[in-house]
Length: 354
Image (cartoon, rainbow, N blue to C red; front, side, top):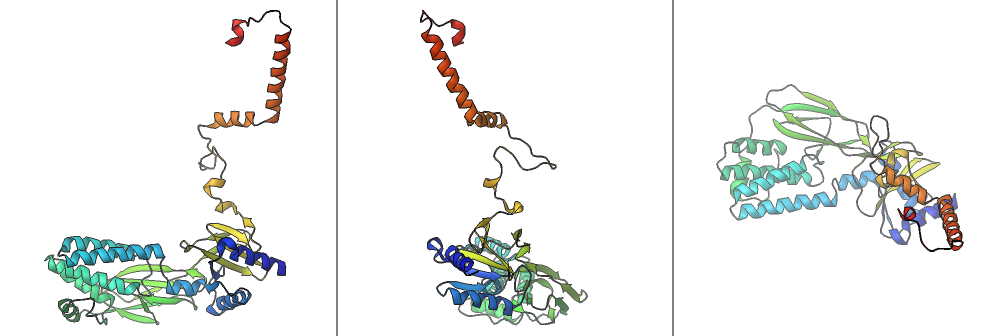
C-alpha cells in the first residue's frame, strides 16, 4: 500500500504536473465532513499542492475561468456602449450577457451581475423609449426586491427608479426540497424552507458534496398557486471503480479529480482520461476517445460497423506490412535475376513489360 501511495504522488505531483490542484470527491453525494476528511488525509502526505473538495471549489467558483472571461467582456462592452450613447448596441450586449448567465448557477457573485444586467436592460429600454421598459424594471425588481444599489455603479436616476418599484402584486409562496446535505440557492440567496417571490423569472441552484451544480430556471406568474419542487443533485461521477464516468463540467486547467469509491479503490480523472492510484491509465469502453477507435471505421449504425471508403487501401496496407509478402517479393526478384543471367540475349519480351 505504501508503494502504491508513493506511485500516486509521483503521478500527481511529478515534474509534468507540479502545479496540480486536486479535487476530492466521491461517486455519490456525500457530506462535507467526509470530503474534508479525505482531503486532510492527502494534505498531510504532500503539503506543496492544493487539495480541496469538489464541493468547496464549486461553491466558490460556480463557473470556469473561460466562461467568466466571456461574461466580463460582454459586461465591459455593454457598459462602454452605454457610456458612448449607443443604447441600442448596449442593449444587444446586455441581452447576450443575460443569455450567457441563464444556464449558470447565479451564486457567489454571479447573482450581482444578473441584477446589474437586468437593471441595465430596463434602463436602456427607458432611454430608447421602448414599450417593454416597465416590464423589464419589474423583472429586475423581482430578482432582488431588497437590493440596495451602489452609487458607484448606477446613476442617481437609476437608483431612484429602482427604489420606487414597490410592487403591490401579491407574492407567490415557493417551497423547495432536496437532499439533506444539499445547499439550495434561490436567485443567488441561500434558501431556507420556504420563500415568497414576486412574479417574474427566477432560478434555483442546488449543490451537494459530491455533486455538480443542478439548475432550474422557472417563471412565477401573477396570481398562481403556491409552488413546490424537489431537486435531486446530480453526481459528478457515475459508474463503478472499474468503469467510472465523469459527467460534470470540464475541469479547470492543471486540475485532477481524485475519486474515492471505497477504502480499496480510488481513481484519478485528468484531461478526459482515468488512471489508477498508481498512475496506470485505464480505458473504460464507453470512455474511448476518437483517436483510440479502429481506423477506417465510422460510428456504429443500427448496431453495425460501417466500413469507410478506404477499405481497399487498408487491405493493401495490411498486405505490404506482412513479412510473408516481402519474402515472396525477395524470392521473385532472385528468381528473375537467375533466369535473366542464363539467357543468351538481353532482349526482354514485350509482354513482360506490359
